[in-house]
Length: 639
Image (tube, rainbow, N blue to C red):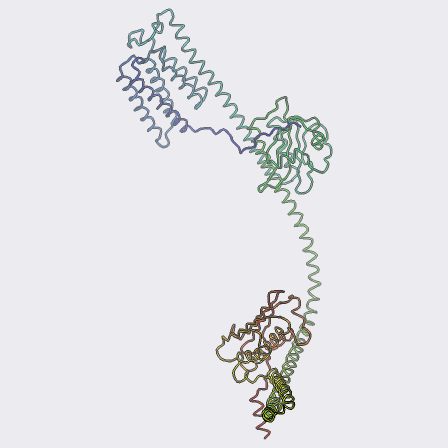
């Protein structure tokens, strides 16, 4: 298939110059006339037939009169057409004088008259150009007859340039004929240009009418038909079609030709894809049935097809328009291509909007139907909701009662736990530890005595007994600390945590940073300690960490304790599961929630673990815990 692209550019209509702009261009030309005259006056001693001062003075007077007329032209609301005519008459007089002053019919400056005629014809109209040619002809004969009659001094370079000479008719005829040949040729070109402009004006009017007709239609089926009919009737295309679709495969939406159009198969032809990819209008000299079977079936034997892609802003592909240019010409004028693209661009936008309107109307109808169904269902649901609301209110009240009971039960359990730990810790500290310590001291004294007496076997057995007693004392002290560290009541939370870390894992590097002012209430302090104790136990058992940082601070009207290690970490999915051998992460969370606080654990494999617990300063639901002072008061009361 032989294809050549018709260049796709923006619209380039020939813009008509205003009268003011035309006069400005003529003003530049007149300035050139004056410059030529001045140069001839100063340097052309062999050309001019008058004194230099006469040529310069006439040029100055000409320029002065032009300035006066130019000033009059700029007066507001003044008709400039008489001024334009006066300037053209003045031009004829001045150029006739230049020709007279430089040799008459044989003047080398006569070309300025030709330039003037051409410029006036092209900038004005061919009618004005012919009038100016006639005026210059009159000036030529006036100059010749004035010289012949003795009114003007003889300046003709050739005697045949004056009336009465046998060759005057031939010389003047050739001069005037050359002038009119230039004038007629320029007028013919200007008239052709005017016809082209009138044709473009008609095309623009047709475009405007098409826009108005399309805007008056809301049916998507009408818009492509209007587009195709207008393009074919205005620009002389014989056949054509429009294929488009809001989505999916293209379908035939408008057709102009002989007979009924054939069906269009799904898919895209090669030329359609090329027009879309290039985003340009293509001129197809002949359709290839193998590569473009759909176009060949719809427009059999088509030649000189203009393929115009239909695009929207943003590059949305809507379809294509294909029109066949009749005749044997294998090209289309740029103006026609530009206008066809303008027609197609507006029609594509209108077609897309019409499709959108149809889609919106369809969706509105569906929404109305759904709204009616929803209204009927809402009425049924409203009654059910009222029934369920009553049931849910009763269930919510029961849940509140159950939750209050659960919290109270949990508080009693914690109270009982702490109440059991406190006396056990005191009894272990005051009883077995003291006795074991005394026994150890006694055995130490016996060992020293036996060492003096040389009883080595007994000394070794006593050393083993001392080692066992030491381990027992350390174990009892650890147990006492786990049950209830005395430093928690006497020295505060930070000291208790430091002591716990020293006892439980002496090899672990740790930092306990205390940023609180004063100690929290006993209940809050104990819950924070137990949560931190559980977190540190997890670090010791599972984290394989070498360092742990503990931070105690105040925030949002409460207290925060954060434990962070550099251990192996774990998968976040394990957060909700307690590990074997301890209360686990859920225990820490339950303790915090019992007091109205929160407990969050964050970890990733290989990135350590961070636990943060926040409790309000006034714990909600926290139990009234039994402390060492409570026990001492109870013992005094019993005594």
